[in-house]
Image 1: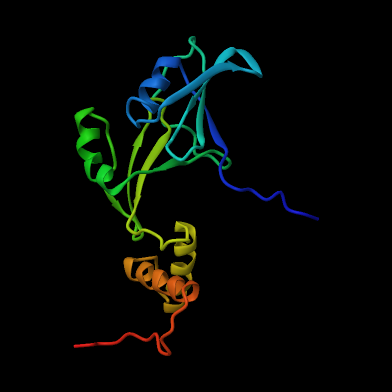
Image 2: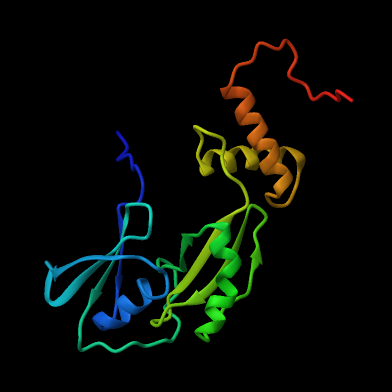
Length: 193
């Protein structure tokens, strides 16, 4: 038996209300360019809007002009989507509370996740949206996922509850040590003073 190996998220499609609500939220709030539109090829009464979330992947929304926004929280039953998280830069994250407050959008306030900071709010249809900003940059040639996996191993070995910045720093050091050779016979920390 062989796997069907994924290589990343291709797109996420959401059921939207009317066209303008989707454009106003995905582009007007989250800054995702509206890149194209065509009919929903499986349901002619709907339009299919495509937005670029910033990484070359797609967020798409099925819209229908007869549907009106309903802001009650979307279902979180088993099998339902709890929330969708989008990466933002530290600079943007530092402005998030102020920019949501300007629009009178209720939000969670900043949440400390140890390895990242998050803020949550709902879209006009009740879908929970998270804006997340990592507290670290992976070393060249490595991904955020590699750093997090290494930090997890360190955290578990130490018996710590959750990943914290110390685990991230030690994970980055370990990845660099394994991936970059040195002429030094001893890579241990030193005090040259």
